[in-house]
Length: 286
Length: 286
Image 1 (cartoon, rainbow over the protein chains, first blue to last red):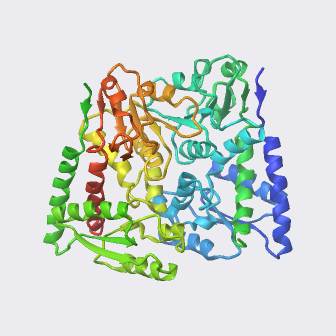
Image 2 (cartoon, one colour):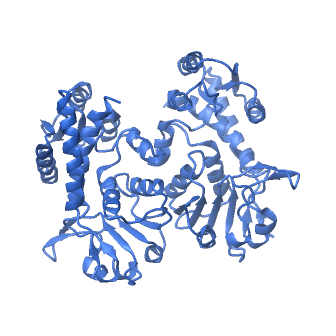
Image 3 (cartoon, chains in turn yellow, brown):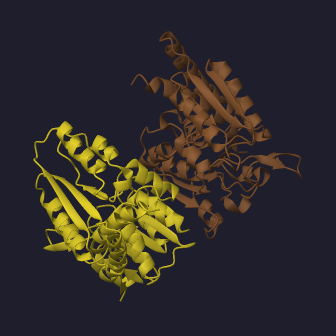
């Protein structure tokens, strides 16, 4: 039986730190505030927003919701975004994407003030991840994966890590962050030949391809020595339940430790987001 | 006998494209111009500058040299840098580093206009390399390695690449650029265990550790199937000649192809720099 790397205790530990920082800020008369910028009423956005708002409330972070109509013009949207950039009472901005087609998503992404980019999507944040410095913030899901590994004392230095997936929200940033922790990282993607051959050689496997249950038994050594972090989450129609990128039933018995889905990486992400908001407010004093 | 991947024909091909682009710009009344910002008279800087000036002259790119005294204050230095940022007749800026200790090198690096950052050192350029988009420019040496591989038709898609070194001027950017070309990249560094074991598994090895002749016979399979790109260059006192990060005599006979040192990657770098200046001028019309 593999050790289950549950997200809840990791999130709890982050939340305790965040709450202490909120109190510090409150003592200075500052209420750390997250602005949520949403166009329309997409179910996924609403669900993530509910989680973020709940998490904010629990630690004393204020939320300012800006909800815009589906047919808003690009100019009007950019005005709203710039208002949030300029508003000194707003410390972090969460902008839901993708945006409707009349708005240039790339232009909007680049327009967010990197100092408020708590979701880690601007060039500044991505450069920070690449360089290993404090420009902007790391993408929340990538950081959630790292926080889980650290919380459970999984050694990274000198370890072989295989990252499956090269997206800008998870694969590429998590690869860089693991390299900054002195792991030896291989990035696998759709053009990689023999991904299972690479993951079987790894000490740690990060599954972030977005392909549900694509990581099966042949991806691991089945000697109970490897750690698997499953970043995926999606609804499995056939099984009638949420599943990750890993076929849990196939992989679990053969590895040392694995994150469950749900209850793994996903349950840490909003705590990271809210911690970033508080960090953004704290950075104003540095 | 391995195929020698010489830099000269690669540089020649780049220079032909660059010269054609210069003529296009001249036809519009624009002389692409590289500003060189140098503090003091360090021998390495002067040597690189001579090469860059010669290359610029050969293709019709103008050079504006700004040479500042070793004891210049940070404020005065930043004024000079900002003048070059604001000067519309300057399309690219090459700032020699490291700067003397009274100047904050990090502040100076970040102050260069990314649009003129032909040496690929700003956050914008590094974000561009990470994202795989046209913000700024790739670091010249990293791009030189890629150009050599492409010129000699070395297939990258689906190939395993081991990069030795994770610096921001070469290891990390070349890893990302190879990943954008659909290679499967592993980044090795000082904390990596068994680097030779990793490089022996690779189709292509990029040696960029900065450790002279550190890549010996045990780093390759000796089955004449691998391609080795040697990014290092330094004076070997014992041998009385320039050497790379690869022990050429040990490695050459066992691989399919290898870059010589000198006459390999280093001989392509200034052509890339000058091509970037011309690209920076061309981008003004896009």
